[in-house]
Amino acid sequence: MGERSDRAPLLDWEEVPSAEKPEVAGDSEKPLASPSNSRALGCNAPGFGWSTSPGGPKSVCIDTGGGGSALPATSITPAATDASLCPDTDEHPSDSTPEELSLESRMVKWEEKDQIVSVFVVTFNTRSGNMLEWCLPRDMDLDGVEFKAIASGSHRVSTDFIYFRKGSYFGLACFANMAVESAVERGARMKSVGILSPSYTLLYRYMSFLEHQVRLQLQAPGHYSPLEAFYEDKRALLPPSGDGVVTASPAHTWSTSLSLSMHPEMKITHPAGCMSQFTRFFGEQIMVMWKLALLRRRILIFSPPPVGVVCYRVYCCCCLANVSIPGVGVAVPEFRPFFYVNVADISALENELAYVACTTEKIFEEKKDLYDVYVDNQNVKTYREGLKPLLRLSAADKDKYRRLTEQRQMLLYSQEVNGESISSEEDLFILFFLEQNNRIFQTLSEVAGSPDPTLTPESVRAMGLDPHGDRLFLLHLLEIYGYDTLLLSDQLCCS
Image 1 (cartoon, helix red, strand yellow):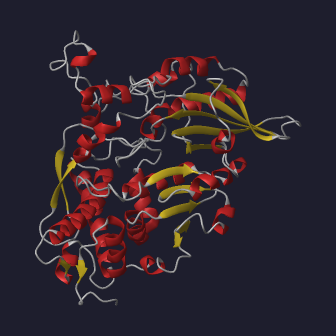
Image 2 (tube, rainbow, N blue to C red; image 1 turned 30 degrees about the vertical axis):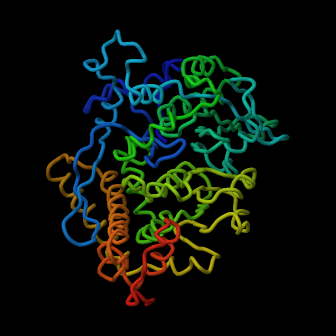
Protein backbone atom coordinates (compact mmCIF):
# COMPACT_ATOMS: atom_id res chain seq x y z
CA MET A 1 0.00 0.00 0.00
CA GLY A 2 1.20 3.49 -0.72
CA GLU A 3 2.07 5.93 2.03
CA ARG A 4 -0.45 8.61 2.92
CA SER A 5 -0.02 11.97 4.54
CA ASP A 6 -0.36 12.08 8.32
CA ARG A 7 -2.18 15.42 8.24
CA ALA A 8 -5.50 16.06 9.97
CA PRO A 9 -5.85 12.71 11.74
CA LEU A 10 -9.07 13.71 13.52
CA LEU A 11 -10.93 14.50 10.30
CA ASP A 12 -9.09 12.10 8.03
CA TRP A 13 -12.19 10.04 7.25
CA GLU A 14 -13.93 13.12 5.89
CA GLU A 15 -11.34 13.32 3.12
CA VAL A 16 -13.04 10.41 1.37
CA PRO A 17 -15.48 11.70 -1.28
CA SER A 18 -19.00 11.23 0.05
CA ALA A 19 -22.01 9.99 -1.89
CA GLU A 20 -23.49 13.50 -1.81
CA LYS A 21 -20.42 14.94 -3.57
CA PRO A 22 -19.17 12.74 -6.40
CA GLU A 23 -15.49 13.13 -7.12
CA VAL A 24 -14.88 15.32 -10.15
CA ALA A 25 -12.79 13.61 -12.77
CA GLY A 26 -9.38 15.15 -13.20
CA ASP A 27 -9.40 16.90 -9.84
CA SER A 28 -5.91 16.04 -8.66
CA GLU A 29 -6.24 18.25 -5.60
CA LYS A 30 -8.54 15.78 -3.81
CA PRO A 31 -7.03 12.78 -1.99
CA LEU A 32 -7.97 9.28 -3.03
CA ALA A 33 -10.30 7.11 -0.98
CA SER A 34 -7.60 4.49 -0.59
CA PRO A 35 -4.02 4.06 -1.84
CA SER A 36 -2.68 2.88 -5.18
CA ASN A 37 -5.54 4.15 -7.33
CA SER A 38 -7.80 1.98 -5.21
CA ARG A 39 -11.30 0.83 -6.04
CA ALA A 40 -14.17 0.10 -3.52
CA LEU A 41 -15.34 -3.29 -2.40
CA GLY A 42 -19.02 -3.79 -3.09
CA CYS A 43 -21.45 -6.18 -4.71
CA ASN A 44 -25.00 -6.40 -5.84
CA ALA A 45 -26.40 -9.80 -4.97
CA PRO A 46 -29.54 -9.66 -2.88
CA GLY A 47 -29.39 -10.52 0.77
CA PHE A 48 -28.19 -9.12 4.05
CA GLY A 49 -25.17 -6.89 3.68
CA TRP A 50 -25.27 -6.65 -0.11
CA SER A 51 -25.84 -3.39 -1.88
CA THR A 52 -28.20 -2.57 -4.71
CA SER A 53 -28.54 0.82 -6.28
CA PRO A 54 -31.68 2.46 -7.61
CA GLY A 55 -29.63 4.59 -10.00
CA GLY A 56 -30.51 4.84 -13.66
CA PRO A 57 -29.25 2.13 -15.99
CA LYS A 58 -27.35 2.56 -19.19
CA SER A 59 -27.05 0.07 -22.01
CA VAL A 60 -23.82 -1.86 -22.56
CA CYS A 61 -23.49 -4.71 -25.07
CA ILE A 62 -21.63 -7.80 -23.94
CA ASP A 63 -21.13 -10.87 -26.10
CA THR A 64 -21.08 -14.02 -23.96
CA GLY A 65 -20.72 -16.37 -26.86
CA GLY A 66 -24.19 -17.89 -26.80
CA GLY A 67 -24.80 -17.19 -30.45
CA GLY A 68 -26.74 -14.38 -32.06
CA SER A 69 -26.39 -10.73 -31.20
CA ALA A 70 -25.04 -9.42 -27.94
CA LEU A 71 -27.58 -8.85 -25.22
CA PRO A 72 -28.08 -5.39 -23.73
CA ALA A 73 -27.23 -5.02 -20.07
CA THR A 74 -27.82 -2.30 -17.55
CA SER A 75 -24.79 -0.83 -15.88
CA ILE A 76 -24.21 1.81 -13.27
CA THR A 77 -21.05 3.81 -13.57
CA PRO A 78 -19.38 5.21 -10.41
CA ALA A 79 -20.66 8.67 -11.25
CA ALA A 80 -24.18 7.42 -11.86
CA THR A 81 -24.13 5.45 -8.64
CA ASP A 82 -23.11 8.46 -6.61
CA ALA A 83 -25.62 10.64 -8.41
CA SER A 84 -28.41 8.22 -7.63
CA LEU A 85 -27.63 8.53 -3.95
CA CYS A 86 -28.08 12.28 -3.94
CA PRO A 87 -31.55 13.50 -2.92
CA ASP A 88 -33.43 15.16 -5.76
CA THR A 89 -34.13 18.67 -4.58
CA ASP A 90 -36.79 19.20 -7.24
CA GLU A 91 -38.80 16.16 -6.25
CA HIS A 92 -38.13 16.41 -2.54
CA PRO A 93 -38.01 20.04 -1.40
CA SER A 94 -36.05 20.86 1.74
CA ASP A 95 -39.22 21.54 3.71
CA SER A 96 -40.64 18.08 3.00
CA THR A 97 -41.37 15.93 6.00
CA PRO A 98 -39.81 12.46 6.27
CA GLU A 99 -43.23 10.94 5.62
CA GLU A 100 -43.38 12.67 2.23
CA LEU A 101 -40.11 11.10 1.04
CA SER A 102 -40.34 7.88 -0.93
CA LEU A 103 -39.44 4.63 0.80
CA GLU A 104 -36.60 4.16 -1.68
CA SER A 105 -35.17 7.60 -0.86
CA ARG A 106 -35.34 6.93 2.87
CA MET A 107 -33.64 3.57 2.36
CA VAL A 108 -30.76 5.01 0.36
CA LYS A 109 -30.27 7.98 2.68
CA TRP A 110 -30.15 5.74 5.73
CA GLU A 111 -27.90 3.21 4.04
CA GLU A 112 -25.32 5.85 3.12
CA LYS A 113 -24.76 7.26 6.61
CA ASP A 114 -24.33 6.26 10.24
CA GLN A 115 -23.23 2.71 9.46
CA ILE A 116 -20.51 2.07 12.06
CA VAL A 117 -21.62 -0.05 15.01
CA SER A 118 -18.18 -0.47 16.61
CA VAL A 119 -14.57 0.67 16.42
CA PHE A 120 -11.73 -1.22 18.08
CA VAL A 121 -7.98 -1.67 18.48
CA VAL A 122 -6.38 -5.11 18.61
CA THR A 123 -2.78 -5.71 19.63
CA PHE A 124 -0.39 -8.65 19.75
CA ASN A 125 1.01 -9.42 23.19
CA THR A 126 4.11 -11.63 23.33
CA ARG A 127 2.72 -13.50 26.34
CA SER A 128 -1.03 -13.56 25.71
CA GLY A 129 -1.17 -13.44 21.91
CA ASN A 130 -3.85 -11.37 20.15
CA MET A 131 -5.77 -9.13 22.55
CA LEU A 132 -8.62 -6.63 22.29
CA GLU A 133 -6.96 -3.45 23.56
CA TRP A 134 -9.77 -0.89 23.28
CA CYS A 135 -13.24 -0.57 21.78
CA LEU A 136 -16.41 1.50 21.53
CA PRO A 137 -19.08 0.92 22.59
CA ARG A 138 -17.80 -0.74 25.74
CA ASP A 139 -20.61 -3.29 25.90
CA MET A 140 -20.25 -4.48 22.28
CA ASP A 141 -19.79 -8.25 21.95
CA LEU A 142 -16.40 -8.46 20.23
CA ASP A 143 -15.43 -11.91 21.41
CA GLY A 144 -13.03 -13.41 18.86
CA VAL A 145 -12.54 -10.23 16.84
CA GLU A 146 -8.88 -10.17 17.94
CA PHE A 147 -8.26 -13.24 15.77
CA LYS A 148 -10.08 -11.78 12.78
CA ALA A 149 -8.39 -8.38 12.83
CA ILE A 150 -4.90 -9.92 12.98
CA ALA A 151 -4.79 -12.92 10.67
CA SER A 152 -2.73 -15.98 11.47
CA GLY A 153 0.73 -15.45 9.97
CA SER A 154 0.46 -11.65 9.77
CA HIS A 155 3.79 -11.26 11.57
CA ARG A 156 5.39 -12.00 8.20
CA VAL A 157 4.01 -8.84 6.55
CA SER A 158 4.38 -5.14 7.37
CA THR A 159 0.84 -4.02 6.41
CA ASP A 160 -2.42 -5.68 5.48
CA PHE A 161 -6.16 -5.15 5.50
CA ILE A 162 -8.79 -7.75 6.34
CA TYR A 163 -12.50 -8.05 5.59
CA PHE A 164 -14.39 -10.42 7.86
CA ARG A 165 -17.75 -11.25 9.38
CA LYS A 166 -18.64 -10.98 13.06
CA GLY A 167 -22.12 -12.35 13.70
CA SER A 168 -24.54 -10.33 11.56
CA TYR A 169 -21.97 -7.58 10.94
CA PHE A 170 -19.14 -7.11 8.47
CA GLY A 171 -15.76 -5.80 9.55
CA LEU A 172 -12.71 -4.12 8.06
CA ALA A 173 -9.42 -3.92 9.93
CA CYS A 174 -6.09 -2.44 8.90
CA PHE A 175 -2.99 -4.14 10.29
CA ALA A 176 0.55 -2.81 10.63
CA ASN A 177 3.79 -4.25 11.97
CA MET A 178 6.55 -1.91 13.17
CA ALA A 179 10.06 -2.77 14.33
CA VAL A 180 10.85 -1.46 17.84
CA GLU A 181 13.86 -1.63 20.13
CA SER A 182 12.09 -3.44 22.92
CA ALA A 183 12.99 -6.76 24.46
CA VAL A 184 9.49 -7.06 25.95
CA GLU A 185 7.91 -6.75 22.51
CA ARG A 186 10.60 -8.97 20.96
CA GLY A 187 11.58 -6.31 18.46
CA ALA A 188 8.16 -5.89 16.82
CA ARG A 189 4.92 -4.07 17.64
CA MET A 190 1.80 -5.30 15.85
CA LYS A 191 -1.63 -3.70 15.98
CA SER A 192 -4.85 -3.57 14.00
CA VAL A 193 -7.57 -0.90 13.98
CA GLY A 194 -10.99 -1.98 12.77
CA ILE A 195 -14.68 -1.20 12.46
CA LEU A 196 -17.95 -3.14 12.22
CA SER A 197 -20.91 -2.30 10.00
CA PRO A 198 -24.12 -4.03 8.89
CA SER A 199 -22.93 -3.84 5.26
CA TYR A 200 -19.46 -4.31 3.77
CA THR A 201 -20.14 -2.22 0.67
CA LEU A 202 -19.30 1.06 2.41
CA LEU A 203 -16.38 -0.08 4.56
CA TYR A 204 -13.85 0.99 1.94
CA ARG A 205 -14.73 4.62 2.64
CA TYR A 206 -12.89 4.38 5.95
CA MET A 207 -9.85 2.39 4.86
CA SER A 208 -7.53 5.41 4.66
CA PHE A 209 -8.64 6.51 8.13
CA LEU A 210 -7.96 3.05 9.57
CA GLU A 211 -4.54 2.89 7.87
CA HIS A 212 -3.66 6.23 9.38
CA GLN A 213 -4.93 5.30 12.82
CA VAL A 214 -3.04 2.02 13.02
CA ARG A 215 0.19 3.91 12.31
CA LEU A 216 -0.67 6.33 15.10
CA GLN A 217 -1.38 3.44 17.45
CA LEU A 218 2.02 1.94 16.68
CA GLN A 219 3.84 5.22 17.19
CA ALA A 220 1.80 6.47 20.17
CA PRO A 221 -0.11 3.59 21.81
CA GLY A 222 -3.15 4.55 23.84
CA HIS A 223 -4.06 7.69 21.87
CA TYR A 224 -7.75 6.96 21.23
CA SER A 225 -9.31 10.42 20.89
CA PRO A 226 -9.46 10.35 17.03
CA LEU A 227 -11.17 6.95 17.21
CA GLU A 228 -13.63 8.23 19.80
CA ALA A 229 -14.49 11.24 17.62
CA PHE A 230 -14.85 8.98 14.59
CA TYR A 231 -17.27 6.68 16.38
CA GLU A 232 -19.39 9.55 17.68
CA ASP A 233 -19.62 10.96 14.16
CA LYS A 234 -20.29 7.71 12.29
CA ARG A 235 -22.02 5.40 14.73
CA ALA A 236 -25.06 3.57 13.39
CA LEU A 237 -28.61 4.53 14.24
CA LEU A 238 -31.25 1.90 14.79
CA PRO A 239 -33.97 1.79 12.12
CA PRO A 240 -37.28 3.56 12.86
CA SER A 241 -38.96 0.23 13.68
CA GLY A 242 -37.14 0.31 17.00
CA ASP A 243 -36.65 -3.45 17.04
CA GLY A 244 -33.02 -3.03 18.08
CA VAL A 245 -31.61 -4.70 14.99
CA VAL A 246 -29.40 -2.76 12.62
CA THR A 247 -30.00 -3.70 8.99
CA ALA A 248 -28.56 -2.48 5.71
CA SER A 249 -31.98 -1.40 4.44
CA PRO A 250 -35.67 -2.30 4.90
CA ALA A 251 -36.03 -5.90 3.75
CA HIS A 252 -39.08 -5.37 1.52
CA THR A 253 -37.29 -2.83 -0.67
CA TRP A 254 -34.99 -5.48 -2.16
CA SER A 255 -37.60 -6.75 -4.62
CA THR A 256 -38.02 -3.31 -6.17
CA SER A 257 -34.26 -2.94 -6.56
CA LEU A 258 -33.36 -6.33 -7.99
CA SER A 259 -34.27 -5.44 -11.55
CA LEU A 260 -31.65 -2.70 -11.43
CA SER A 261 -29.12 -4.70 -9.43
CA MET A 262 -25.71 -4.10 -10.92
CA HIS A 263 -22.38 -3.69 -9.23
CA PRO A 264 -21.96 -0.34 -7.49
CA GLU A 265 -18.77 1.68 -7.54
CA MET A 266 -15.80 -0.49 -6.61
CA LYS A 267 -12.50 0.75 -5.25
CA ILE A 268 -9.68 -1.62 -4.44
CA THR A 269 -5.93 -1.48 -4.04
CA HIS A 270 -5.27 -3.02 -7.46
CA PRO A 271 -5.02 -0.23 -10.05
CA ALA A 272 -6.30 -2.58 -12.78
CA GLY A 273 -9.44 -3.44 -10.80
CA CYS A 274 -10.41 -6.38 -8.71
CA MET A 275 -12.43 -8.44 -11.17
CA SER A 276 -9.90 -8.16 -13.98
CA GLN A 277 -7.05 -9.08 -11.60
CA PHE A 278 -9.10 -12.00 -10.34
CA THR A 279 -9.70 -13.24 -13.88
CA ARG A 280 -6.06 -12.97 -14.89
CA PHE A 281 -5.00 -14.75 -11.68
CA PHE A 282 -7.17 -17.82 -12.34
CA GLY A 283 -7.02 -17.78 -16.13
CA GLU A 284 -9.27 -20.41 -17.71
CA GLN A 285 -9.98 -21.78 -14.22
CA ILE A 286 -12.32 -18.83 -13.67
CA MET A 287 -14.87 -20.79 -15.69
CA VAL A 288 -14.69 -23.58 -13.12
CA MET A 289 -15.08 -21.02 -10.33
CA TRP A 290 -18.07 -19.54 -12.18
CA LYS A 291 -19.88 -22.88 -12.37
CA LEU A 292 -19.22 -23.68 -8.70
CA ALA A 293 -20.45 -20.25 -7.64
CA LEU A 294 -23.61 -20.57 -9.73
CA LEU A 295 -24.23 -23.98 -8.12
CA ARG A 296 -23.97 -22.38 -4.66
CA ARG A 297 -21.10 -24.56 -3.50
CA ARG A 298 -19.11 -23.95 -0.32
CA ILE A 299 -15.83 -22.47 -1.54
CA LEU A 300 -12.81 -22.00 0.74
CA ILE A 301 -9.75 -20.15 -0.54
CA PHE A 302 -6.40 -20.67 1.16
CA SER A 303 -3.51 -18.23 0.93
CA PRO A 304 -0.73 -17.06 3.23
CA PRO A 305 -0.77 -13.38 4.24
CA PRO A 306 -1.29 -10.71 3.08
CA VAL A 307 -4.98 -11.56 3.15
CA GLY A 308 -6.48 -8.34 1.76
CA VAL A 309 -6.16 -9.36 -1.89
CA VAL A 310 -7.65 -12.76 -1.06
CA CYS A 311 -10.68 -11.08 0.50
CA TYR A 312 -11.26 -9.48 -2.89
CA ARG A 313 -11.17 -12.91 -4.50
CA VAL A 314 -13.98 -13.90 -2.14
CA TYR A 315 -15.95 -10.88 -3.34
CA CYS A 316 -15.26 -11.68 -7.00
CA CYS A 317 -16.49 -15.25 -6.56
CA CYS A 318 -19.82 -13.87 -5.39
CA CYS A 319 -19.98 -11.60 -8.44
CA LEU A 320 -19.69 -14.62 -10.74
CA ALA A 321 -23.12 -15.80 -9.58
CA ASN A 322 -25.01 -12.57 -10.29
CA VAL A 323 -28.40 -12.90 -11.98
CA SER A 324 -30.64 -9.91 -12.71
CA ILE A 325 -33.77 -11.79 -13.83
CA PRO A 326 -36.44 -11.23 -11.14
CA GLY A 327 -37.42 -14.35 -9.23
CA VAL A 328 -34.44 -16.49 -10.21
CA GLY A 329 -32.64 -18.04 -7.28
CA VAL A 330 -35.09 -17.01 -4.55
CA ALA A 331 -35.40 -20.63 -3.40
CA VAL A 332 -31.69 -21.49 -3.44
CA PRO A 333 -29.28 -20.88 -0.54
CA GLU A 334 -27.95 -17.36 -0.34
CA PHE A 335 -24.35 -17.16 -1.58
CA ARG A 336 -22.77 -15.46 1.41
CA PRO A 337 -19.28 -13.93 1.63
CA PHE A 338 -17.55 -14.74 4.90
CA PHE A 339 -14.27 -13.16 3.81
CA TYR A 340 -11.48 -14.09 6.27
CA VAL A 341 -12.16 -17.03 8.59
CA ASN A 342 -10.10 -18.86 11.22
CA VAL A 343 -10.57 -21.89 13.46
CA ALA A 344 -12.96 -19.90 15.66
CA ASP A 345 -15.40 -19.81 12.70
CA ILE A 346 -15.61 -23.57 12.29
CA SER A 347 -18.92 -23.90 14.14
CA ALA A 348 -20.46 -21.11 12.04
CA LEU A 349 -19.31 -22.64 8.75
CA GLU A 350 -20.72 -26.03 9.74
CA ASN A 351 -24.22 -24.57 9.47
CA GLU A 352 -23.74 -22.78 6.14
CA LEU A 353 -25.23 -24.27 2.97
CA ALA A 354 -23.41 -21.93 0.56
CA TYR A 355 -20.56 -19.52 1.16
CA VAL A 356 -17.21 -18.18 -0.04
CA ALA A 357 -14.43 -17.57 2.46
CA CYS A 358 -10.67 -17.29 2.67
CA THR A 359 -8.20 -18.36 5.33
CA THR A 360 -4.50 -18.34 6.12
CA GLU A 361 -4.75 -21.47 8.27
CA LYS A 362 -3.69 -24.64 6.49
CA ILE A 363 -5.53 -26.82 9.00
CA PHE A 364 -8.78 -26.05 7.19
CA GLU A 365 -7.75 -28.31 4.32
CA GLU A 366 -8.16 -31.28 6.67
CA LYS A 367 -11.71 -30.17 7.63
CA LYS A 368 -13.23 -31.67 4.49
CA ASP A 369 -16.77 -31.57 5.86
CA LEU A 370 -16.64 -27.76 6.01
CA TYR A 371 -16.27 -27.10 2.28
CA ASP A 372 -17.11 -28.48 -1.14
CA VAL A 373 -14.22 -26.85 -2.99
CA TYR A 374 -10.75 -25.96 -1.72
CA VAL A 375 -8.71 -23.40 -3.64
CA ASP A 376 -4.96 -23.23 -2.99
CA ASN A 377 -3.36 -20.57 -5.16
CA GLN A 378 -4.69 -21.39 -8.67
CA ASN A 379 -5.28 -25.02 -7.75
CA VAL A 380 -9.02 -25.74 -7.50
CA LYS A 381 -9.83 -29.14 -6.01
CA THR A 382 -12.64 -31.09 -4.39
CA TYR A 383 -12.90 -34.31 -2.42
CA ARG A 384 -16.52 -34.84 -3.49
CA GLU A 385 -16.70 -37.39 -6.29
CA GLY A 386 -19.87 -35.86 -7.75
CA LEU A 387 -18.14 -32.51 -8.27
CA LYS A 388 -14.81 -33.67 -9.68
CA PRO A 389 -16.05 -33.76 -13.32
CA LEU A 390 -17.01 -30.08 -12.95
CA LEU A 391 -13.34 -29.19 -12.55
CA ARG A 392 -12.69 -30.15 -16.17
CA LEU A 393 -13.11 -27.39 -18.73
CA SER A 394 -15.64 -28.02 -21.48
CA ALA A 395 -15.26 -26.80 -25.03
CA ALA A 396 -17.80 -24.06 -24.28
CA ASP A 397 -15.77 -22.97 -21.22
CA LYS A 398 -12.66 -22.52 -23.33
CA ASP A 399 -14.63 -20.65 -25.96
CA LYS A 400 -16.15 -18.29 -23.35
CA TYR A 401 -12.75 -17.56 -21.86
CA ARG A 402 -11.34 -16.85 -25.32
CA ARG A 403 -14.19 -14.43 -26.01
CA LEU A 404 -13.71 -12.74 -22.65
CA THR A 405 -10.00 -12.30 -23.34
CA GLU A 406 -10.68 -10.90 -26.82
CA GLN A 407 -13.24 -8.44 -25.47
CA ARG A 408 -10.78 -7.24 -22.84
CA GLN A 409 -8.10 -6.71 -25.50
CA MET A 410 -10.57 -4.77 -27.65
CA LEU A 411 -11.55 -2.63 -24.65
CA LEU A 412 -7.93 -1.85 -23.79
CA TYR A 413 -7.21 -1.01 -27.44
CA SER A 414 -10.24 1.29 -27.56
CA GLN A 415 -9.12 3.04 -24.38
CA GLU A 416 -5.62 3.47 -25.77
CA VAL A 417 -6.82 4.85 -29.12
CA ASN A 418 -9.69 7.00 -27.90
CA GLY A 419 -8.23 7.95 -24.55
CA GLU A 420 -11.47 7.04 -22.78
CA SER A 421 -14.25 4.50 -22.86
CA ILE A 422 -17.88 4.32 -21.80
CA SER A 423 -17.05 1.01 -20.13
CA SER A 424 -14.29 -0.29 -17.86
CA GLU A 425 -12.67 -3.64 -17.23
CA GLU A 426 -14.88 -4.02 -14.16
CA ASP A 427 -17.99 -3.47 -16.30
CA LEU A 428 -16.71 -5.90 -18.91
CA PHE A 429 -15.94 -8.80 -16.57
CA ILE A 430 -18.98 -8.48 -14.31
CA LEU A 431 -21.43 -7.91 -17.15
CA PHE A 432 -19.95 -10.81 -19.09
CA PHE A 433 -20.87 -13.30 -16.36
CA LEU A 434 -24.15 -11.58 -15.55
CA GLU A 435 -25.23 -11.87 -19.18
CA GLN A 436 -24.10 -15.48 -19.34
CA ASN A 437 -26.16 -16.32 -16.24
CA ASN A 438 -29.17 -14.41 -17.55
CA ARG A 439 -28.92 -16.28 -20.85
CA ILE A 440 -28.99 -19.63 -19.04
CA PHE A 441 -32.00 -18.88 -16.87
CA GLN A 442 -33.91 -17.10 -19.63
CA THR A 443 -33.55 -20.18 -21.81
CA LEU A 444 -34.54 -22.51 -18.98
CA SER A 445 -37.66 -20.44 -18.32
CA GLU A 446 -38.63 -20.44 -21.99
CA VAL A 447 -38.18 -24.21 -22.31
CA ALA A 448 -40.07 -24.84 -19.05
CA GLY A 449 -43.00 -22.80 -20.40
CA SER A 450 -43.11 -24.53 -23.77
CA PRO A 451 -45.47 -27.41 -24.69
CA ASP A 452 -42.48 -29.78 -24.78
CA PRO A 453 -40.26 -28.91 -21.76
CA THR A 454 -37.25 -30.84 -23.02
CA LEU A 455 -33.72 -29.48 -23.15
CA THR A 456 -32.27 -30.27 -26.55
CA PRO A 457 -28.68 -29.80 -27.72
CA GLU A 458 -29.87 -26.65 -29.52
CA SER A 459 -31.36 -25.12 -26.36
CA VAL A 460 -28.23 -26.00 -24.38
CA ARG A 461 -26.08 -24.28 -26.99
CA ALA A 462 -28.40 -21.26 -26.77
CA MET A 463 -27.37 -21.01 -23.10
CA GLY A 464 -23.72 -20.88 -24.11
CA LEU A 465 -23.10 -24.39 -22.75
CA ASP A 466 -21.65 -27.57 -24.23
CA PRO A 467 -24.35 -30.26 -24.73
CA HIS A 468 -21.85 -32.99 -23.87
CA GLY A 469 -19.19 -31.46 -21.61
CA ASP A 470 -21.67 -29.44 -19.52
CA ARG A 471 -24.31 -32.15 -19.05
CA LEU A 472 -23.41 -32.80 -15.40
CA PHE A 473 -23.29 -29.07 -14.65
CA LEU A 474 -26.74 -28.71 -16.20
CA LEU A 475 -28.13 -31.59 -14.11
CA HIS A 476 -26.85 -29.95 -10.92
CA LEU A 477 -28.28 -26.62 -12.04
CA LEU A 478 -31.75 -28.02 -12.70
CA GLU A 479 -31.81 -29.73 -9.32
CA ILE A 480 -30.58 -26.76 -7.28
CA TYR A 481 -32.79 -24.14 -8.94
CA GLY A 482 -35.92 -26.31 -8.97
CA TYR A 483 -36.42 -26.90 -12.69
CA ASP A 484 -37.69 -30.40 -11.96
CA THR A 485 -40.24 -30.28 -14.77
CA LEU A 486 -37.56 -30.06 -17.45
CA LEU A 487 -36.40 -33.17 -19.26
CA LEU A 488 -33.06 -33.86 -20.88
CA SER A 489 -33.01 -35.03 -24.47
CA ASP A 490 -31.53 -38.48 -25.02
CA GLN A 491 -29.00 -36.77 -27.28
CA LEU A 492 -27.43 -35.13 -24.22
CA CYS A 493 -25.01 -37.80 -23.18
CA CYS A 494 -21.67 -37.65 -21.43
CA SER A 495 -18.60 -37.18 -23.58
